[in-house]
Length: 517
Image 1: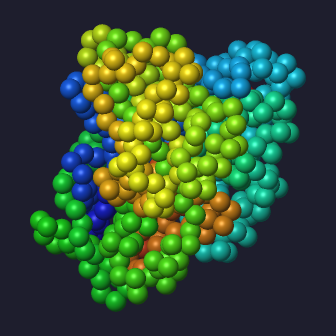
Image 2: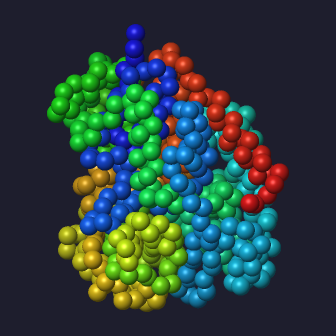
Image 3: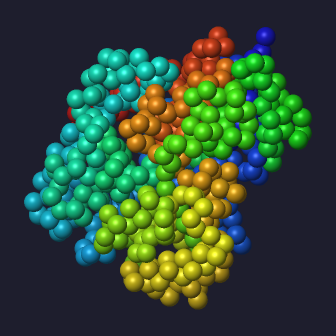
C-alpha cells in the first residue's frame, strides 16, 4: 500500500527531504504557505531587480551534490555554481583590511600584511581543522535520537578534538595572535547567529569549509538552487502546493495522521515539519501533547540573533565593493554584546554587503546593481518598536556605510525593501524574528536540540535549522538525509541514497591528503 508523507514547508530542508523521500516510493506532498519555495532562502523581484531574502554565501555543495546524484541528476547541470576568488573582503573599522583569496599562498600574503607572524598559522589551522572535520563527520551524520549516542565510538573519537568548553575565538588564538585575523576566521559564527566569544570551538570548521572547499555564487542567486530542487522533486512525482497554509495537524492520541488546510485534508502516514520549530509547535501542536518541548520550556531556550535588512536596487555600479564585503566594527565585542543582550540596537553596527552584480549582471537591469545589506541585531523581545525605529536605523546604516567609504547611494536608489526582526516574525513566521533559529550553545546541541524524529510526538519528523545538526545550508541538507532515513526506516521503506554519502568521506580524505585547493 502506498505510504503518504506530508511535508510542511518548502524551505531547503523540506525540498531536500522531498527529493529523498520520493526515492522511497512514498507519495510526497509539500505544503508551502508562501507563493514561492525556499523559505528564508527564497528570492523576490522588484522592477527587474532580483534579490535573495536570506543566505547569500553558498558553501560546501558536496552534500547537495550527493542528494542530486541519488536522484539521478547532477547539481552542476541544474545550477551554475560560480566559485568566487576572492571569497570576500573584510574591512576593519580600527584599521586594515583582508581579502580572503582561495589560494593559500595569496591568503598568507594578505594575512602577513596585518601581522607577519600570523601568516604561518594558516597552514596549521587548516591542517588541524581537516582532522577535526574528519572526526566530526560521523557525528554530523548521526541522528542523536538518544543521549546514548554521546557514548558512540565516533563521538568518543571526536571529543579529543572538539574542546567543547573553549570558544571559537580562544581556539583561534592558538594559531593567530592578531584579533583582526582571528575575526577573519570567526565572524562566520554569524551563520549560527552567535558570537565567536561564546560559540563552541567546534565551529572553527565553518571558516575551514570556506577556505578548503570554496565560496560559491549560484547564478541567479540562492533562489536558483531552491528552484532546481523543486524542479527535480516534481519530476520525481512530488506534489508542491504553494499558497496553502497548514491550519491544523490531526492527531490520534500522540500520533499525527494528517493535516488540514483551507483547501482540504491531507492524510499522512508520516509528517515532516520544515516550518520554524518554535512557531510551528505553538501554532500547530496542542501544548498538552508536548512533554519536553512545551510552550513553557521553549520560552526558556536561547535563540539566535536577528537581522535588519536593506535590499537596494541601485542606478549604476558601486565602486570598491567586492561580491561579498564585511565591515567589522572597531569594538566588535561590544557590538556583539548589544546584539546578544537584546536591550538596544547596536550603536556602531557591523554590516555585510553583497554586491552580486559584479559576478552576475543579470540580477539587475542593464547599467544597474543590486545591493543586499545585512546588519545583525537582537531578536524580538518587545524591547524595540520597529515601526518607529526602522526609518531611523535605515538612516544610521546608510551613514555608517558612508563612513566606510560606500557613498552616494541614496540618490541612486531606484527600488528598496526593508526587513526588520518584526518583519521576519510576521512575514516569514520566524519565532522572535531569530533568523538563525535556536542558538548553538552547548546546552542546545546534538541530543539537546529537538530531534530529527521528534521525541514528543509519534509519526512527526523535523528538518531545518531548529533540529540536529543545526543551521546553515550544508548542515540543513545533511539533516534532511538523517530525517528522511529515520522516516523511511519507520515506514519500512527503502533508503537508496544511503550509500551516496560515502562521497563526503572521500572528499575529506582527499583534502587530508592534498591540502588546500
